[in-house]
Length: 121
Image (cartoon, rainbow, N blue to C red; front, side):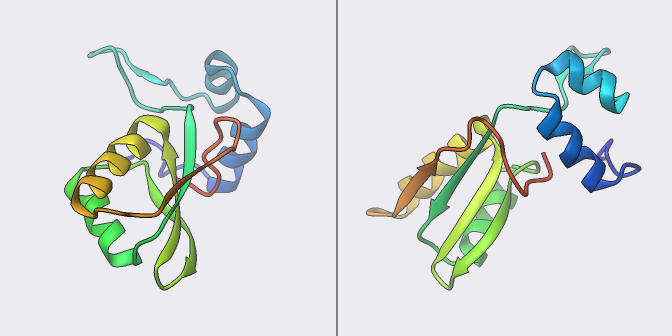
């Protein structure tokens, strides 16, 4: 279950832009970024975006198959050109899988200073 469902996405986006440090993010939102019981990160604030030369269904199917729940198609640019956004670790997993399954795939990482704009992360 997503711990963010009780929070306004706009508030979280604003918070994300103003607070880059993990401690400041936690103070601003009142949310913990670490599951104290397991010591695992819940939120990953090291974001990444990329342009991918595939149709949205194939990308969305890959996101689902890989269990990449903090990554999304952030912009539908064209029938065979989408922008994906999410935590860097998930974007890199998606990149590896899509390139392995689609030889010659167009993939362009975008420079966003570590911010995953338009993502649920």
